[in-house]
Length: 174
Image (cartoon, rainbow, N blue to C red; front, top):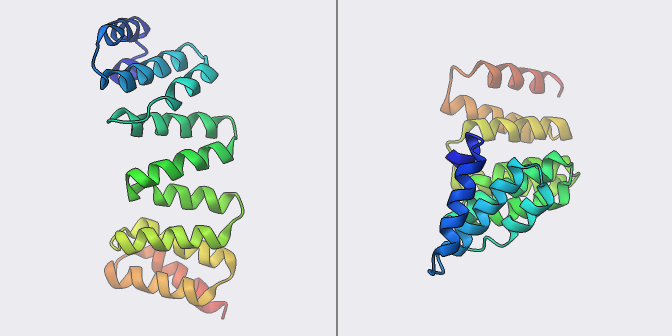
């Protein structure tokens, strides 16, 4: 990743060459990942996608899925981004809010609410995601849900000005 971030094509080429000489199976996912990074640097995104799809195990799998999500979103391919985020969700619940946001954008409000709720059941202290849920409830016109969420945020963080203002706004509309 450092070579990619520093746009070090030559370094990635050397790394790929070294990984090709490794006989261990564990080197193969890293090889595909490095090839994907190089393809991205060379603006060959279709080749990058192909390489990333072969990263099926090890620590590079999560990074490859992140890159696939990024490429898909940059090309407005929401379906592919959603598939990658669903795979990331299996690795860590930390990706649930991103999947929920994308699902909301794609128009499936019920599923998005379920994903936000699932995440918050696992990480109940994540007030920023809770704020997103409250705003989503408000957007959907689910006043009681928005009131509960903003009230809950205030119980956890009484000085949260945004939650206080939003609670007042939502309460005033009932």
